[in-house]
Length: 269
Image (cartoon, rainbow, N blue to C red; front, side, top):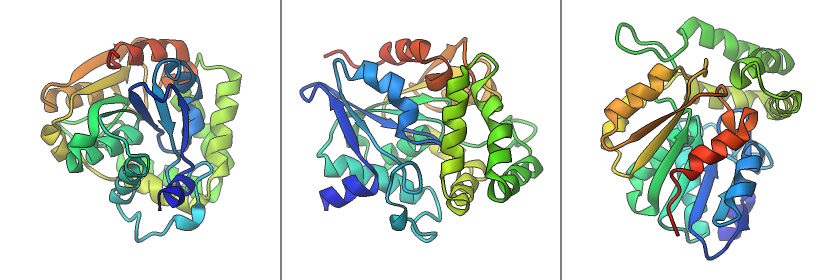
């Protein structure tokens, strides 16, 4: 069973086996390779675990079904399965965007598994909910993006990559992200995107008991700074750190600054 889960989620490990474990969770439209710069550095003195959500990267696409992944609960269970398959405990989860939120939801079910959550650009709700909440998107804009994603993956990538990376990202980072967006099955991607962009997990924030860090890019147009501040205000005991550079994917556009910010919060051996 453990081998099946490793294969299903393309689990890879690296680093110091005797060190504290850091589990990296990628965001929508990417895979574990989005963490490669950060993971390589963290692996110098930690055990690093990476995986792909089903339907992303080199996961087993045959394991995907609309019933299992009708909500984010299917991905939450996958993350917990990975932890159990590797017999992990007291893990520091570093999650990007929806990867951070999936980690947050997993911590509500199994808080003993996690020593800490470090979330890079997370959002509990991407839609605006006026007058009190600025999530960044209007519903009609999201529907247009979803339709474009399924109809023309190339055009979708061309529109979203500059928004995600910001104007100072390298050409290689843009190409890598565009390739990842276009490689996934369009129907699965749209299904996952709907669960990311149209759901609301704000009610869960106050229930988080695991120490949490929110790393919020100051120039993130997909997850505006207001979202980071909202999460911090509604998560007791959380820490908010603003990243002055980078957009929605600072681990790709500004990896060294992102490494430094994450290392500020990793547990000391």
